Image (cartoon, rainbow, N blue to C red; front, side, top):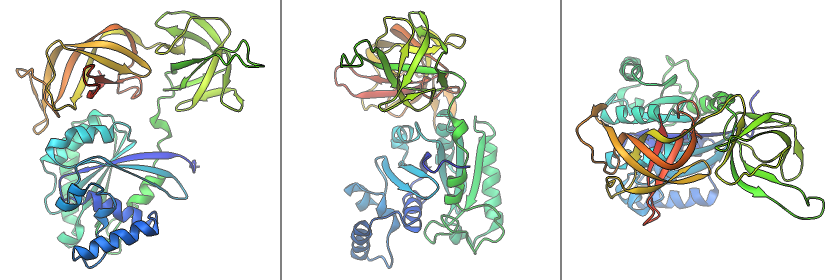
Length: 417
């Protein structure tokens, strides 16, 4: 039984001109998720450019530069709904210099769709995108072998590409990989099943996205509740109310649970779990609630409520896989603000352990300079302990961002090792 309101986030990745924007346009167009005025505007633009039909890529290429060059530069987010599910699409750029945008778009995704041009097969960019998807622990990957119409819908070409991709994915931490042969331009296997490829017995892309099981993607074992703020209404009926408000990052909390507050280590029991209009028996990720405790404990923003028998590691020294997002290089021993759940601390990059060559996926041990789009393993020291889990076990409590105090720019995103 699917939850009709369940939200699935997916990201698209692929090389330039593999047809990502056309695929999303086709998905929106065939699932009737486009407003009439949008359709009219894009039909007019398509006519001006001399296209016979509607140029589907224009539904996502919102920036003027993108429309003129026919490429995607920024991460474009699109929302659409079918009777079975709600979707958020992050259309990320294919160019090498936009690795950071791919990381941004993929960081919250349940599914990565990687496009491959059937004429070219698995190329360097495909490896890079598969590597980033694996690094970000995206639970599901759909490999869309696109432009099948240009290889006469050949089953052999498709099978060769599947073999090539399986060869790389076997070396990565990817558990669920699915393959779909398609033509985004003609609509084969996007929303409707293709009559041109009777040899493909699987479902089209939209059906795959609608029925994919994603409930188990959230960590339900490790109960983590980062406190965002303390509620003291002082109004009639709530004179003594002291609630700790925030969003459940993972796991399940129930009334009566024995909890520990970190980093102080004080223990108590959950008295009530409240939302705006009612009291709940339990709360689970990603619900936003207010929790009250049996005892008065000094708790403030940045503290974390966890179950007493299952605690994260409290540490000032953490190892992180970092993707550098800023034009300016990382400065040696410079201080940054590290943001982890609701906890902000000062931090310093102590050491660059190694960098990845994104193109060959090899480690570089002798180059210690971090530049834009670099992915590297670093050691970070914080002023106060952070309550952390490994990213592969918990994407919420295992991720951090670094902010430059001088410019207030987000300079890096990281996954705790």
